[in-house]
Amino acid sequence: MHRRAVIVTGLCAALALGPGCARPYAGPKTLAAIGAGLLIAGATAWAVGDRTSRNGLLIPGVVAASLGAATVITAGGWLAGSIACDADPDCPDGEACREIPAPPGGIPYKQCMHRE
Picture 1 (cartoon, rainbow, N blue to C red):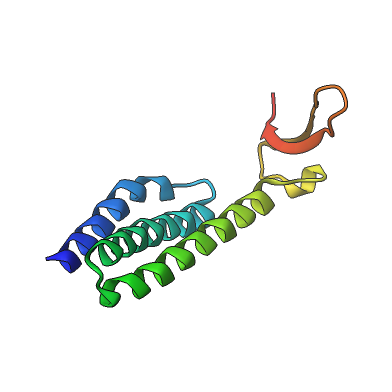
Picture 2 (picture 1 turned 180 degrees about the vertical axis):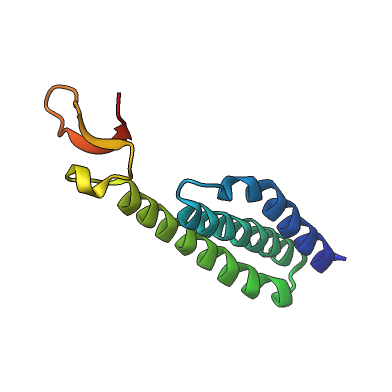
């Protein structure tokens, strides 16, 4: 019964996160959705295994939750690298690289934005 709850939780998370994999930046969004699904399923297995003292769910849950967290962090880095730009050639067609002002004492950054 507990394994069934873990599987159902993972499938529900995957279905809920699936629409986030649309363009633009589908690759990083898909990787983040997979990581979030692993994180949710792993955390559920971890909690169920800890509560029922079942090592058959506890250890795989810890591993899956750790792998999911690492995957989400990797997807965040990939997305940050995908949206960063230094000059107009780095931006897709129809977009220009613009400097975003920072508050006093902050560091401004550049971002691709639609041309006006």
